[in-house]
Image (cartoon, rainbow, N blue to C red; front, side, top):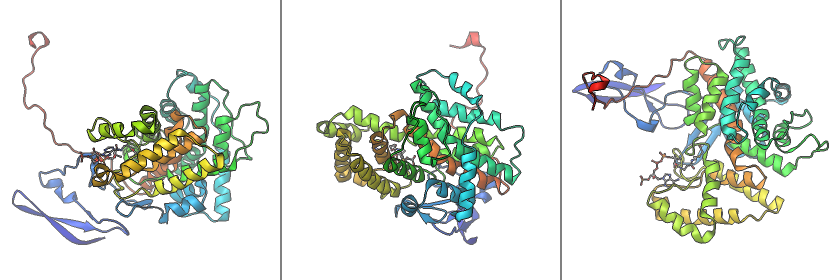
Length: 426
Ligand code: CMC
């Protein structure tokens, strides 16, 4: 609802721009009135632009607050299972017992993938990065679910969400198994969501009595919850932008996976471990910090576009990290190195002045390593978890009329050059 207006004066003319308040957070200035003004707004990196209205997730970066559907992230991570959280993201509210049973059953039912999908895996080189495989095979799902799919039908949209949430652990584990040259493992009905993922990753057909350590499956489930959504981040905005053209939703999620892969976003958890490898030992930390300060490299797992105080996900992740490492009795020198790095960075004016704190990926990389997940799978796990968020945003967009996303630009290229034939070009 517009409470009052902001006035913008441009070229001597006043524009009344409505100020709209949401239920939480900064109000926004609606700049639609600029359409006929002769100006565009300019905001590289979308630092101050809200392209959508959403009811899914709220972040207060200053306070270090993250809410999914109004619930604080630490409460969800500590008291709810990932699939309950996924239900809340998709449907708007945590499930009651009956809704939970129904949703879990649907997810179980759709966890398998068409046998023909195996052929897509076989097209990749054995050493292909699992994220490259994920972009390909999740995109390939669009070929399996295209003809009969009518995105204007609510039921079709809902089944799409269930299929994606259900199949992601299976596809993620298959991408790992393929890289290992091991046979694919199929989901089992007696395992929960996180257990099934770990089983499909680590069991082989010979392991008839495969057991999943509950400490590990609980930590994995928490990792899924902490990564489930994060409002209009780069990959979610990518899914929304792709979705705004009416594209097939499986292809839209593949676009989200591609955007997530970069080291500034979901690829940071993998990059943290690579950085720790590069630093090597605690003695090398000061030298590495000098490189960071001279902007030769970034301290991966630090900093965030939105959080300028602390990342609430990182706090839960740090506690989980401590629990997992002590339960498993792991004493990894990498952890000691990570802790030394964290301590030095938190005390250094360079990081304090720029509000740079450890983000979720600083600790998630360490936990994932401790539970035996190979580094190349870190971002895949992020994509698995984020799928519930991505598809919830896609659903939200499709539940009301929307426009194709089509930004403008500030053109600074050449003007009116005459065409020169190739033989005359210097
Ligand atoms: N190491 C060293 N300096 C940094 C870092 C870092 N990790 N992050 C930001 N800075 C500096 C940056 O150089 C700039 O300094 P100055 O003002 O002197 O030029 C200042 O801090 C502000 O940074 P920015 O680049 O304007 O911040 P941004 O909001 O555009 O970028 C970021 C946010 C997450 C891309 C960035 O902090 C970064 O690259 N971090 C490392 C990668 C990382 O851990 N990403 C995971 C984010 S959490 C998972 C997710 O939600 O995707």
